[in-house]
Length: 186
Image 1 (cartoon, one colour):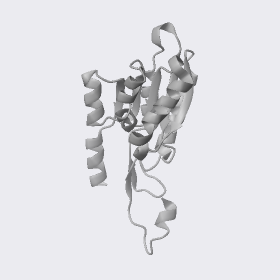
Image 2: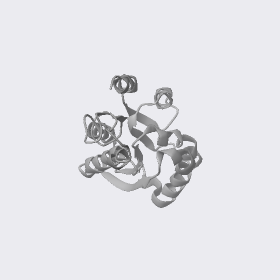
Image 3: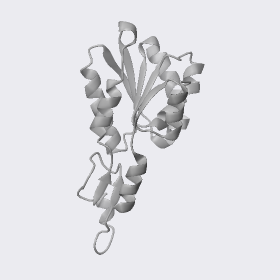
Image 4: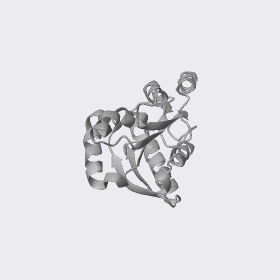
């Protein structure tokens, strides 16, 4: 952000961001960054990974490495999984959120071929990844994969979870209405 502000002549504008960095609150270039604590969100998501039937949980994390907040969540989920004696991290998939609908189905097929039954869970930094998983997983015969989103809580995700007709178990929902008002008040 600082490099972009340097292009302005005169006093820097007051900037308020939403998920603009990995930390909420005041920042060097931001008057305020409105966000839930990504460490808490990641811990809550990782805590929901439960090894199936006394076995091992094999986890794939979907991340968008372009964003600091996403990298913070991913690193924290990796750390949490490393403390779980019956959990193993199989892979971290770096797919831009904006490309998820196009790229996730192919990634799922590749992951199934690579890991097979060892793969039991998906952790994602955003519900957008879960939007593109249900039918491709069913086509692969994988109705058993458990999906957990570390952040967002979109209406689509909440409806999908409530219906019980998808592999997504949970989303760590953010108070987006409240955050919207915080942005407007900033």
